[in-house]
Amino acid sequence: MRKRTWLVIIAAELLAVAAPANAEKKWQGQVLHMAVLGENFAGAKVILGNINGRCAREFGDLLRQDLLGHSVMLVCEKELTAAATAHHLQPAVPASGGAPELALALGPTDVISVEISRCQALPREPMIGTGLPATQISRTEGHFLASLRVTDLASGSELAVLTLRADPAKQNESQSGSPEYPGSAEVVDIATRQGIEQTRHLYSPWKENQELVYMDDKECNLRESWELLKAGDYSGLVRTARANAEGCHAAPKVASAAWYDLAIADMLLQNYDGALAAFGKSKALHEMPQAAEMAAQCQRNKALAGALAHQVVEWTKQEHKNDKQAAEVRTGIIFDNELVVRLVQGDVADADIIRMIGSEPNRFALAAEDLQKIRDAGVSEAIVNAMLAGK
Image (cartoon, rainbow, N blue to C red; front, side):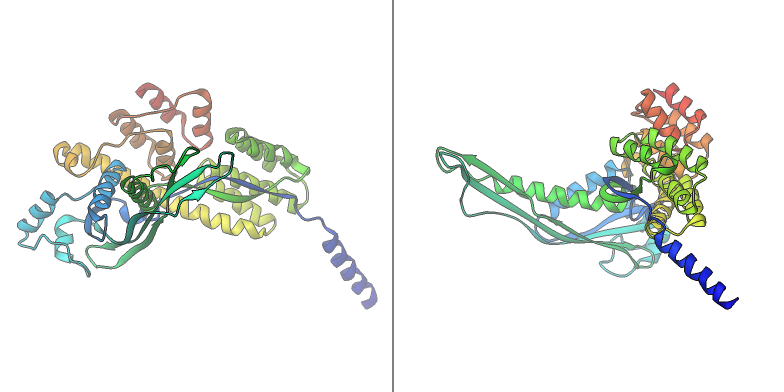
């Protein structure tokens, strides 16, 4: 009896070893990430604090314009002075540490400060390229390096530290002599603007080229959904992936892969609730190492999407509560398809979204494929109809 039991165990182990692994592919594409400080910026105001170093004035002006352009509620000097005067406080923001009394007067407020350690453009040694006659190259290289710090005004606690680095280059070429070097000021401007682009990771959703694992087993039609992913047909992908997952009755490992593929498809359409549900079903069938990391990323994006949605609602409330005051601290929000999806994923009520669509300027894309994409992301027909009516 004991010998028979051991034979059963050995046979089971051999079957486990022989079981084929899931067929997986690597996909390179753009994945949306929510703003790093979405939760902290939700409903909060922002003060531009000390900006020091070379190019400080230029960088500060660009940062102010970019924050306003992304509907961040900036505290203007007039508002800061008025709040401080009303409460008999100093209007200056401390370089370090909190200012709880000033924060109490202003409401939730974050402070952005920047220390620029390098901002310059230098010509390189002349270079000789290929060709006959040889191409002569004059290149100017730019360098921007800064540390950006975000703190809570009330407590002085550090919310985020971001290193900004940009090293652009621009060159002129000629086959008839030495060309002029590109102007230093132009290259410095390029480097500074690239630094600004990096700050947007704090307060604006951004896309990153990312490699994802996707399953393409022959069973359960997974290979067809892989072809749709490669083609960039996300709406077709999510519909096919859902049909594959719901109709898959193969071994647990393959069925788990089908639900995993659906989760990835939903993530790409910013349907985080759907993705998390699919990740859960995949895990219940079979543990996939790559699924845990993607589920954690999805959970972070869902939390930040909720914070961003709350932030947009707060902005629109302030705008219509006092249009004159709002004009001093922020620019108007332009509604587009992506913002509507973010509000839906942030659990904002349909009625509130429809109200905002009716009162805010918009740039909706309303072609059939655009509307199908947002439907697949979970946008209701009531909201779609409001978008169509508001165009």
